[in-house]
Image (cartoon, rainbow, N blue to C red; front, side, top):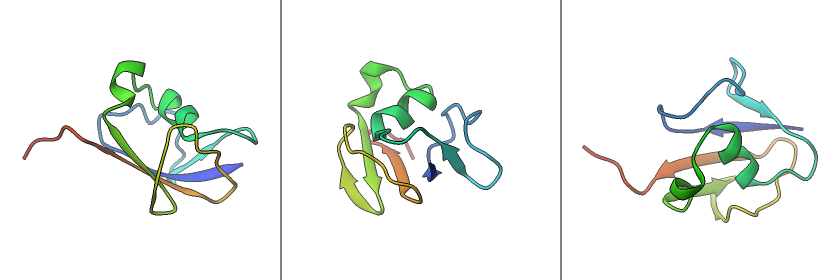
Length: 77
């Protein structure tokens, strides 16, 4: 399945294609996205995740065509 990913610039983007999609196996979760983006386990709890623009937990199971947005709770400005 393919999901659209919106993530911070400091993630590992090697698993995201030029159109912003990541290919995952059926039954994959938000946590699987975080793993593929190379986010360490300790930092995953400081992330805000949304699936289709609704807040989601790391265990939220994804479906083909979902949009996953990730923001860090710790950001500067």
